[in-house]
Length: 573
Image (cartoon, rainbow, N blue to C red; front, side, top):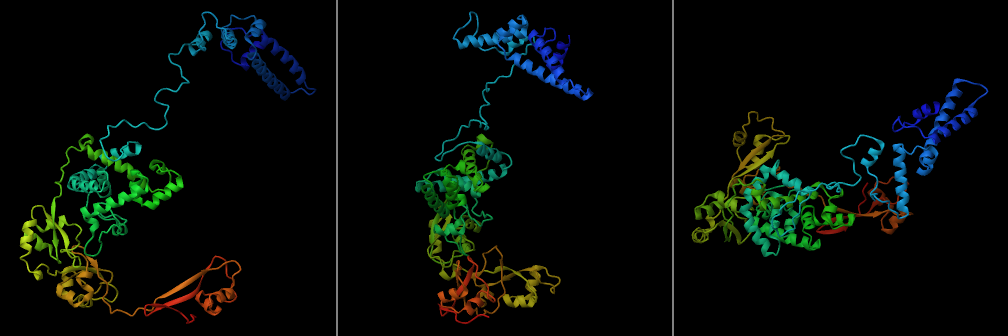
């Protein structure tokens, strides 16, 4: 009949074998005739027929919806088709709901809700082996990646493992393996001595791994930020902790003295950051003020929280994870694949006091060791000798050689302990330079410069960097090339033109004033007791120019005369 066919097209039934409930048929027939009459139009046409069909389909869908919302008993009474499977499921669900609301449990009935298998059997659908569960399965209730459990070694600094630390553990084992192998090889040379210093200062001994990630225990390490030595001090911080830095010596390279300075700095950082070694380490890398601003910005003293923000640089965010990864591997290298590292022997030395400037060759001959051994034990020395203005300098010599040195050194006359050496310079030629003029400037022969630099055309010298070797006699004649001002051995210095010293003009100092609202040129001139013409000349004010609030203008000038600052009365312009 039409209603059944129509309903089948409008709303697919679970199974076409089952009869459509009479309630739906009666309602649909009623709606069909009602709206067919309403939609009848005086001007019949295809458009009206289509509109009528659309309205009929709409109301049939509404009838099905209303029918599904009726109680099961009412639907059963109305249809008389309780034997339909889909009706049994609906009746079963509604009766269970009513029984639960009254606290009544039917005999032989399970208190569990209808599951998918029961529903499938009632609807005669194929039974699936598995069903999707709305319960979260074990292992997927966390959004962050779970890190494998690590059997962490014992340490006197807090060790932890997260995704960042694990990344650097993997990095040191793969792409960074060659670097880390070198670090481990040098580590045993300095770690015993450094741990002894840290222990004496009351600090955790495992802080030595800061030096590992800073420099790889290299005494000659030099960063782009001009940080030097195993603990990578910049000049300002090094001098703050009494490390001497000058053309003769750089104590940032001294593994012993720089460790003492690092211990003092770390102790201050630890106290400043409320005994948090992660923040102290980050402060060692970025500076304490940078970390204090980050703490104030993010209102947190947790390093991992601070590292989530954008304020700290990537280097600082990676610093603590890199430290932890290096410590974890270095304490158990074989566990992480570094069982074949050839470690250097620990550095051992005695210290002797040098009363005056002494050539390192003299020291090496006195104790019968190679010159390179003395240089290696004293990496802080930039030259071939001890500093000239450093009395009682402590020089490191191989362990067990102290008695021999004291005996042999006492036999050497003071004037034979040091001898001047030739120095090597680099000079960039400028317009007008010739070989003869450069040779006269350095007190050498032009032929020596040409031979040393393999010059074929001595005419085109502008822009070329020439190497010039200057002997002791030439340096004595020219104070500009004196040893105290010359570059270290093995490091060429760029020599500047030795022109006659020009008399420098007197130094001027200007005093500025910030213009406020309502200020005029006359009012400012009266306030600072200066004429308007002078202020206008100093600030290049022409005509009747209005002073803008916030602009800084010069209201006074001073000139240095005889070591004193005197007001400048002369008008400019």
